Amino acid sequence: MKKFVFSLGILGVFLASCSYVPETTPLTSSPPKLNQSPPTIMWLKFLPPPKEKIPVAVYNFRDKTGQYKIVGDISTFSNAVTQGAASILVKALEDSGWFIPVERENLADVLTERRIIRKSIEAKLRQEGLKPKGDVLPPLTYAPIIITGGIISYDTDVVTGGAGARYFGVGGNIQLRKDQVTVYLRAVAAKTGKVLMTVTATKTILSRAIDINAFKYVKYKRLFELETGATTTEPAQYCVQAAIEKAVYGLVVEGILRGYWEPKDPKYVFSPIVQEYLKDKVKHILKEREELAKILSKDYTQEEINEYLKEIERERGLNRLFRLVNRERK
Picture 1 (tube, rainbow, N blue to C red):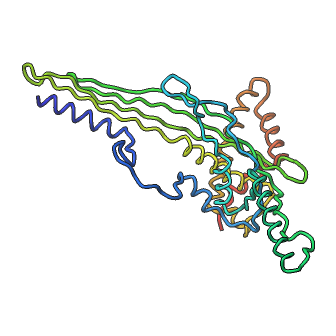
Picture 2 (spheres, rainbow, N blue to C red; picture 1 turned 135 degrees about the vertical axis):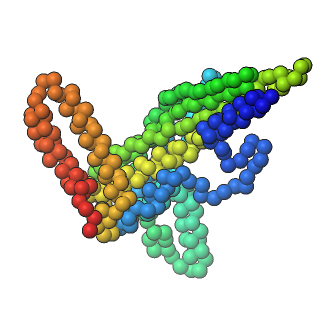
């Protein structure tokens, strides 16, 4: 009996240490909460202030995966990811403090309401014996930048696995599954149609299932049975929001690097929030350069490869990026 209790306790501690405890159990409820955001919101909230906020338009930002939610092994008629990604993008652009989003997704509603307001003002002026001169409403705010893109990938079962153990009729197991969602953002110049930059961001979605069970005779004709478990899954909408917020963060910093917009103070380019992005970008560039060198080393010498890479870095302005990262903060 002591061995049984001991093994059950060890199993419970082991599984508890590997599990995620949700805020509420399935048998309880919590009141609604305002402004629930993933930790990625901090990358936007603490961006350095801009020299001038830029009006941007978001016409659409749709789910382009075409995938449906899978329950078990069966596909349902519910979409795998949120269909309201445009609203999430607008909020992320506003939260960054760098952009002024203008309404374009429901532009027909705005124009209809403006006609109603115009008719009401003109009717009131006529009642007062006045004649309207020109348009009684100011023009709509135009946006020099259009932000577009979409959710372009939702991959399920990228990683699956689990572990379990059983000792004298007492056992349990934990199963893991990792999915992944990818979003793309494009900044387009409205006057010329030129694509200024493209940014991508990927977020994993983790699901866990834990089961604990016991089946053991503790005394003669006395059978003890125990079965319990829990399943937790990161909300797909939460993960899409995190990916969009991180992509907007990358969009702001890339725009600073390419000179499309400027921070309020040029020294802000050396702020920690910007430097973190630059270090991550340089790390990826160096990794890609090493992989390319391995491929080319079969036919070219190391000197030839280094000379070619230096020329490419100079043409693409990567040398400036390296200097921005390596320069010490004053």
